[in-house]
Image (cartoon, rainbow, N blue to C red; front, side, top):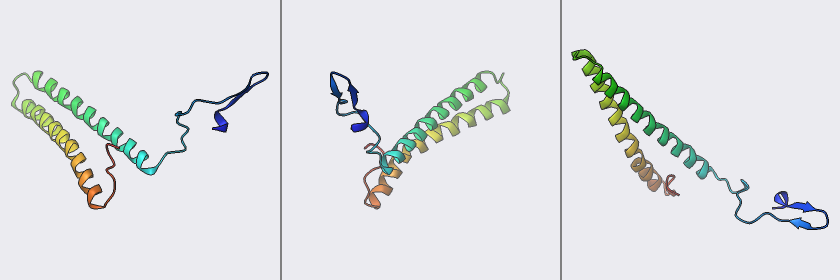
Length: 107
């Protein structure tokens, strides 16, 4: 906490309040959790973008069988991606439990 203190002449030392993170308590688990969470959020957002794109393709298909089929596949694969992302929480929990580790997500 010495780095976060301030000295003012004629007043003395001003010490920073407690509870301010200084980066000294970073662990590998926190870093992995952060990147896994970031990856999950990016995957969910990307899947939602592709669902919207597939819906737009379907609306603008003009009745073309090939375009409708392509849009349907885009939506289907995006929903499958969302299911896989959801199952990733279960898989990570099972693997962490089998290895005797704390869960990587949710701590």
